Length: 406
Picture 1 (cartoon, rainbow, N blue to C red):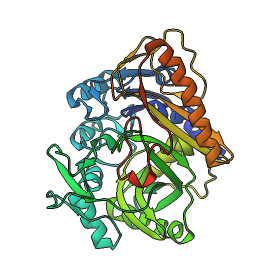
Picture 2 (picture 1 turned 180 degrees about the horizontal axis):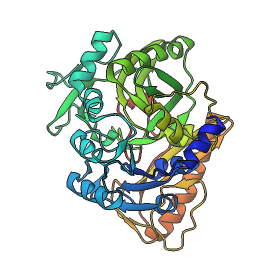
Picture 3 (picture 1 turned 45 degrees about the vertical axis):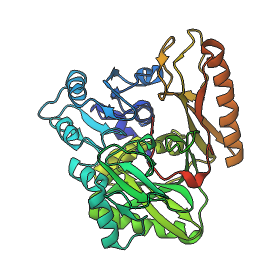
Picture 4 (picture 1 turned 45 degrees about the horizontal axis):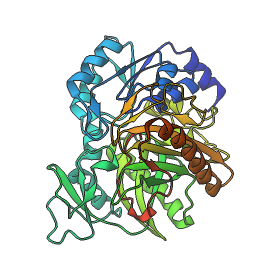
């Protein structure tokens, strides 16, 4: 990012309301870009509070998201709506199924992100997959009625945020599902900026799922993902077409299954997510500032990806777990719960970060650091935990969007 743009951001007095299931990554990105943030999320982690001007936790859970009424009350308390708007609004994961709440949050605040209408067009499977068909873009077979033979099919919650909402179609899903045939290959994410007309590709990443039979819960992500030249060269054109049709702005990601030279589009995540942790590892990147600029209609002229392989893994609680009072969190651990906090089964404990010259070394660093962390937690709580370290299960099993704190 040009130094002049960074200086302009630093001089900009506008504070930002950040809303996400976990706001730490966005708060850290805002700090790196010289911006101020007030955070609403589910966790209120210690590092989030250190990074933000202010932070409030909101009722809800990682699987079902925010309580809408509680979210709106907390927003008014933390960053009151005003005309002209005093606060900018930047959102991450958690509002995919809440376009109405997003519209209300945007009243009296300046929205930097995709509009509620774009959110609906992107996350409503009927509209999204019909658009892919019209554009001639490949995707797995998708239906809104249960398949006669559910073998090889998945059921996904409409507007779901997090792989925990994805189950094999042979299970008994809750209402509001759509069904998608499993696609062969491995999962790949494409992170990009958009200005409503064009896309600017930042890079490719390789996500993983947390351990467990038929688990689709987000376990982590690593960049860069290696792709055949024909695949990599074809993605920018697909992104441009989708940006024009959907009116996407800011930082987004496209989830795909890649099988050799074949690609199947799964979905678009129309907001910043785990890509902040792996692509914004260098303070010079300042992706938060690039997100704001893209929302204002300006894409960068160039982009330098991180020099090393960067990765993040999420550690989940499998049983009730208490954080030790005297635990000294290492610098590579993020989303740090407060000392003495009790974590219920299924909730993320923290994120583990790593950077290394190779993907193998990055994965090994994640595994080593996770083992160390678990030894500290188990020494106090004696509980088992489920860990999302890549690859937790065969990569081809992943057929869902990010979850947990992503």
